[in-house]
Image (cartoon, rainbow, N blue to C red; front, top):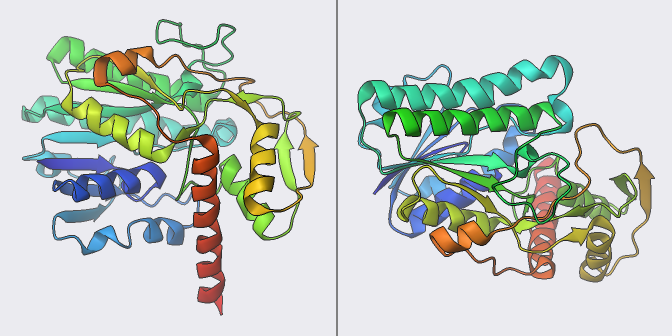
Length: 322
């Protein structure tokens, strides 16, 4: 099967591309290398998969590329490209989020409509940020989304576009709402990456709020598995939570990292940031029912994998400087 992945050089996109190639599929990857974090990290993400003959990489922005030729013959589209970051989405940066998260999604969907390209599935990567500070946990897909960040607003708009093009024109979209993804290749702006990097460099960890806030952390291979299943099961028109299945405080995460790294960690607590939700915890029963989704990776196991990967990353970067 021929698969198209947008955001293919990113954290989740590169892991998904690796899985699809290992499964024997042909993969076309698109990435704009937006300067949200160093390009060198994204280049490393796809360093190994570039060697596959079944992998074609295209550098370009979805708003500028001629999409029709790229969609020709594609069976599955995994739309992961987006401008990430809750805290950075305020103020003048918002236009970047509307361009990357809304307009790019609309352009993909509209190109499918205009060309009449018959795909089997359009899998859209959404976020738990669409829920905002919901009072009822675990949160189910029946909960009315109320995002509290501009980023969350743009991801919800992308969801609505998918639903519109599905219900009006039959494009087989499915929406996956990811809950705090972690693991090897995690973006450097994300908390676990920050924490691991600080430990490696013998620096204190900075935590916004008091450390008792909770998250439903999801290991990246679980996200990849959910994407594969969402593409191959009968899921058209569905919205599903994809999460790790447990609710953990940031203080508990730091305690686990102390065990994994065998390091006493100094923690500096800072003011809560605008747009950060207090707690997340997902009801994943719909994903279990529709695609047989069950998270298998424990937080300790996943954290150990990420810590080792980040140690390797910064060792490699230091050698490259030398």
